[in-house]
Image (cartoon, rainbow over all chains, first blue to last red):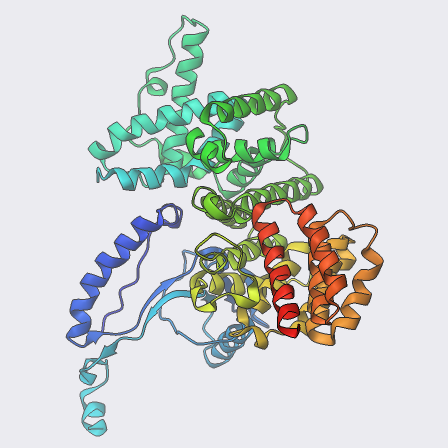
Amino acid sequence: MLYAILCYSNEDEVMAWSKAEDDAVMERLQGVIGRVAQQGRLGPTARLLPTTSATTLRKGKSEPLVMDGPFAETKEQLLGFYIIDCEKLEDAHDFARELTEANHAPGSYEIRPVGFFQQGVVTDGSAVATLPAQRTAAE
Amino acid sequence: MNDPAWMDAAFAAARPKAVAALLRYFRDLDTAEEAFQEACLRALRKWPENGPPRDPAAWLIMVGRNAGLDGKRRDKRFTELPPEHQLSDLDDPEGGMVDRLDQADYRDDILRLLFVCCHPDLPATQQIALALRIVSGLSVRQIARAFLVNEKAMEQRITRAKARVAAAGVPFDTPAPAERAERLETVLAMIYLVFNEGYSASGGEIEARQPLCNEAIRLARLILRMYPAEPEVMGLTALMLLQHARSAARFDQNGSIILLDMQDRGLWNPKMITEGLALVDKAFRHRRPGPYQLQAAIAALHARAARPEDTDWREIDVLYAMLEEITDSPVVTLNRAVAVSKAYGLDQALALIEPLAERLDGYFNYHGVRGAFLQQQGRADEARTAFNRAIALAGSAAEADHIRSHLDSLEKVAANAG
C-alpha cells in the first residue's frame, strides 16, 4: 500500500526559524527519510514555498476562476495532488484548467511553487493500489 | 514542549500581530511593547506546563492585554480590584479571541503598526530602526550592529523616534480604502528601505547588515498575507527575493562587487528565485503594473537566463520603458540604456543617456555607465575622463574600487596596444 503523508504546521512559526534551525530540521528529516529511501519505499518528497506565492483555481458554474492566495475553505478535503514542471505560472493554471474539464466535481486546485523536491523511487510496483486482476494482467 | 528555540520562533511569529493588536488597545507604543514582553514572560512559564496554545498570537494578545491593564492600574494606584477572571492568566484565553479577531482586524492593526513607524517627520533611518525594533522585534544591539553605530546611540535614536511618534498621535480610525492604499504604499517604501540597508552593504559590513534583507522579506510576506490580491505587494516581495537570491554571488573574497554578467549563477538561491518568479507571474495576471512589479519582472528575466548571453535584453528594454513612464526618473533611463546597449548597440545607448548629462552630472553611476559605453566603443580618452569623474563622485570604497577596475582594464589595453 502506498500512503501519502501530508504535512500541516504553523507557517508563521516555521518561517521565523533561523537558517541554522531550518537546516538542522531538514537534516534530521533527511535522516528519517533516507532510511526509507534506501529500502526503495520512498516516493516523491516536496517542501512547498510560502502560501503567499500560491494561487487557487476555483471551479465555478461557468469558467474556473484564478484567485490569489492559498486554498482556504474548510468544507472541502484534500483528495490528491500533482507535481508538474512548468516554465510559467500560467502553464500550471492551464493544466489545472484542463483538470477541471476532465473532472466536473466542484472544488479547487491550489497552485504552489515547490522549494525542495526529491524524486524518490518505490521499487515494489505491487504497492500501488490496483486490483489483483489488473496486477496479474500487467505482469 | 519546553524547547526554547520553538518558543522563540513562536514569539517572533506572533509578534507583529500581537503588538499591533495591543497598540490598538492601548494606543501607546511603549505600553503595547511592554505588555507583549510581559505576555512572553508568562508564556515562558505557562506553555511548558500546559502545552503550547492553539493560537499563540491570540494567547499573547489576551494575556498581554490583561498584563497591560494591571500595569496601568498599578501606575495610577487604582484602588478597585478588577474581576478575578480578568486578573488571572486564563487557562485557555484564546478561545473567544480567535472568533473576535479575524483576519480583517489583524490586517488594519498590522498596517497601522507599520504605518506609525513611517511617520513623515522621521528620517528614513529612524523609520527603519523603529520598524525593526517594534515590528520585527530585533534587539537594539542587533539594529545598532546593522547600522554600524554603537548600542547607546541606537537606543537614543529609537527613543527619540518613539517620542516623535507619540507626540504625533497614532491614527486609530479604521482607514477608508483610499487612505489604506496610501498607507500601504508608504509601508512598502519603508520595507524596501529596510531591504536596501542590507542589500547595499559591502565588504566587512555584509555579515552584520544582510539579515536586514531577510527581515524585509519577512515583513513583505506578512503584508502579502494580509493583502493577498495587491499586485504591488507581490511585486515588492518578488523583487526582494530575486535580488537577495544573488547575494552569495555578488561579492568576491575581498568584498568587492561582482557585476551580474560576471556572477557565478550556480551560487544563486534557487528557492528564492522560484518563489520570486511565481510571484511576478501572479502579480502580472492583475494587469496593473507598478514600479515594484516592473523592477521584479526585470530581475525575473535575469533570473531566468541560465547564462548572461541568454538574457532577453529586448524584453528588459520594454519593461524599463514602462518603468520610465511611471517614474519619470533619469536613473531608470540610465539602467534602460544598459539594456539598449545589449539589445540594439552602443550608439543607441549613448544617444539615450546624452540628454541626462545635466540632470545626472553629480551621479557617480551616470559617469560609470557612460565610461563603460565609451570604453566598449574604443574611445579610451573619453572613457578615462568619465571614469575619473565617477571615482570622484563614488559614495563608497566599493563603488570607487569597481570603477578603478574599469580604469585598470583601460590601462591594460593601452599598454598592450603600445
